[in-house]
Image (cartoon, rainbow, N blue to C red; front, top):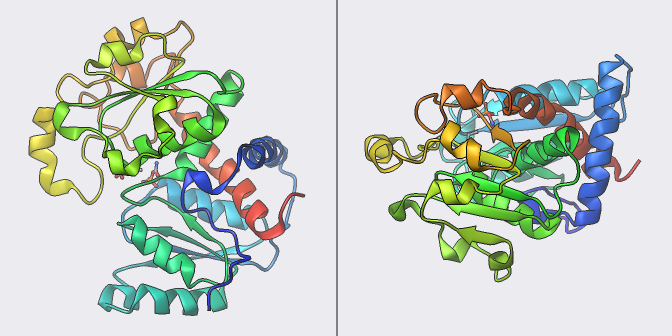
Length: 307
Ligand code: CP
Ligand code: NVA
């Protein structure tokens, strides 16, 4: 049976602005502890199950290192080697895995899969990327923005590129944390209106031209043109997205001091020029590192509450 008291992190809207304020502060605290090599084991003897139905470098490593640093242990599961790959129902897998572990992270395809899993899980479930959302990454990105600048409230984030999981998560975050998103994508790759909340329009402006989206931005961000699961469309996407590369022309019209972010992995010469991703405004390595720190705060919060 599902346990309604259990909190999950399936999309950015699962936490309030106050909870994000706590998580951002806690991430900074845990990061500082980590840098000082201080032992902190609030999740001693706890087990994290990590289920991957898609490839990963950062997500796997940051969750595995993160639970270890908190005193717990990670088990890596993938579709190929588990019964999930042979058709065991997601609901059954959730019942079983959640009886043996304390917290579960899943990277999968449709958001409906993680929702079905969570509905049958006795323990917290974390979204490690679905086709629709990537909340852990946007949490790390916002933490990175705060570290380099200050509160993201009232700021403008320019999204240049595909209407993908990262884009939808940024739009959700804008509503909760009260900032603006400027979105620009080719006409055939626009946002699905059904995915947007009724209030999204207050925080979201759509631009035909990527240059206009970047004007006045405090943060410029993009992502691959072809996300995992859409590989068959790669050739047609390469053509369609030409003109949506974040390059120096786009960064020049952004606010001075604007940051560049990319969740990685990146393709230099496609969605971003080498000059930008390897340039002085880019904070991509901090974003990647911060996955570790924010997810430690997230796991601690889901299992222990506010400490
Ligand atoms: N950004 C991100 O989630 O990277 P991985 O696909 O390597 O986990
Ligand atoms: N949008 C990309 C992000 C990878 C971390 C994808 O879904 O493949």
